[in-house]
Image (cartoon, rainbow, N blue to C red; front, side):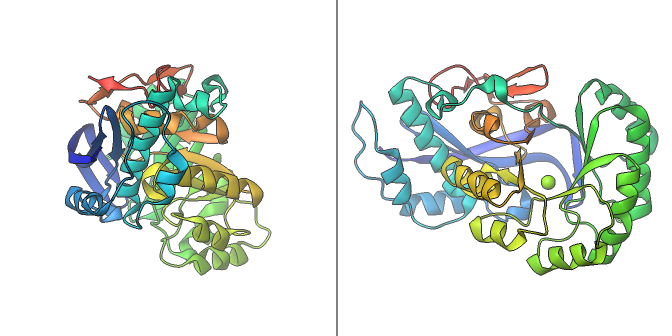
Length: 339
Ligand SMILES: [Mg+2]
């Protein structure tokens, strides 16, 4: 069985603006392995392309996988070569999909999880072009319990105004994602104000370059009350999580950063051991990658799996949003079908 790589274009329903830039289309990588599939979300900041995924995949020597019956998933995953996390993620997902299909159960069921125990997902608003538009959107999204606001306009004062407008429009629990837009000094200034403005969580306030910056930011804040601080772009592997222990209150785990389901489960367990909270997020991805993450959602404190709501031509179907929870399909493996 040989993994095959192809392009998976994803069109956004509207331009998606964050501190890293604006996107209207993303090209992810699709990996097929017999009947099974995996996806690599490829946001520009990862620096991984579909060609990189294909190059890595061409170096992978999978052991012979029999045509039916259970497959030794753990042993196969352990033998994979090092490479870009998104590429490893796509193959990890395809292998998990194949494993679940062979055993005849959804992945979450095989992990002993009940999708009804998943946290309600955040719904994301990208950086608004004008503040009136934000007020309208925030009011429309006010029906949701959890709202994620992208900030990082380059002007911390305007970022604060974005938060205040949203706070007036909704009762939702608010998470602010700065995508690393503030310096340590700016973050130390703005974070206490964000707590007063009614923000519960701030994600990646500072750039991801140096874990010591997180500890420096904590020292500057001292005992000042601030929202819970979660690391996203700063976290890829176990070493990153350990480096932020005592400085970050939580981590954002994404399959494409971690390298798939197996390493994501390790990060979740490690965060728990270090008394950190876990947000399970996603990239701009199709329902294939989002369903894979949704199977793990009962393990975490928060989810941000609303990508299917942000795209207009989802190549896969089967993910449903029930009472704000992103529910994976009740079918073997990852469980999605082509649209
Ligand atoms: Mg983020």
